[in-house]
Image (cartoon, rainbow, N blue to C red; front, side):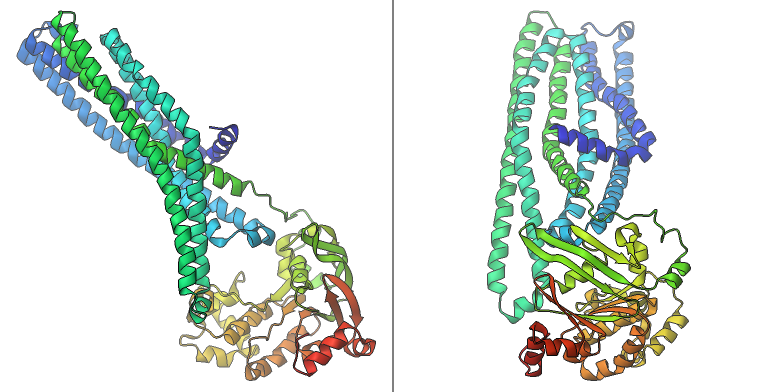
Length: 598
């Protein structure tokens, strides 16, 4: 196992600290279980020696045949029952610890994934991330439960059996131990090849999940544009690649199992040949030979189990690697908790925040040669309403994400009331920013939960707020009012209704800075007219940054910022920019003709 694997395993070992006592008990039980298993062949051999009148253990020498056999049977029964009881207790605790381990790792993985910036999630397909959180964590649990502890149990059994055999008859014992060498060499030789093959299996499974998840999310487009056959063919190719990768691991696994079976049969044949000659020559009793035949079978049982666990162990190491890669992914946006704002009570922060927003020479890019925002500077005064205008790809949505610290700029600063947002806790920033995006996301649950989100609001108070926002007609249309269950992403609501709820949940929070990305884009004229009065009241005495494509919305702004390719090229009121005759004037003319959006 490479050094980085040791480091990752040791890092994941911290999840087991809470179960140290239980792990110690599990490990201590390995010794009596191994002894109980090792003594059984010896007892059978001694029984045969007693019946044949051959030399036996000193404790049995003075007993009659009947008494000695009874004692041996009683000890054998006790060893079997003891081993079964201890193994049952051990298995239960191993599985319990394994489930605790996976629960803790999955919780940390989820928290870490939620803390990673949008930059990471933009390039990581959801299906691949889900595979890390589910399949890989399950593989880690399996390798711990039946792999790591099982391997340790097998090693202890091998040591106990080896010592016992050498003590009884060192020549046959040494012969059997020598047969273990080629099996060990083969397992070590095949480890790296199997590891690479298993990693490929995990990657292909991730791609399979990613394709499946993408097709489910885009099912409407798939069906409308009759992409079933084409997407099915693509998914089939991914499935074939996954099957091919799995077949590669099956080859290694079956080869090891077959080789162990061959070596075990050869070892038994050698014991019979050499032991039979020794019995004939009078150098060893039949009872001892029987003991060694049983030991030869017991000796290879741990190796067979090791071969069976070989897949789990390598799969677990692959899972450790993939989980480690995700946990090692750097969190770009660090929350600064020790800040001036964070030391203030929440109510004081709300009361004292004026709402000035300033960008100072801000630049953001995915690649050094592809700037999304380049050296951007502007200031929005408290209570000022500013509209962002520009062609697609000019960086308008990126500005919102930078302001909310979903992205971190490579250069420059973003300030709220003169305070760098990197010096303010993220929770405080987002508490003061009310964001309504064009693509509304609603959680499964009910309407009330989607309006509350992180707020503690009683039902009666929530109903009053909805009435003030003019949502009476919408709530009355819903079968169970605010308690109406919502499907995934609010699938049982229209686009306009989802957008209406998105505006409402922002209004409930009473933010100081309002950010709107074409908030009424999906509303019909009647719904938009109903909401317009409440939007005007929501914008009153608040700093507002609005991305708009409708000329009427832009004209109402105090100031308009015109962007192109991440740069601010024009700035002013609607009339000033029309008189300037630049890009804004051209876009406005095209929209008046119904040929373009701002």
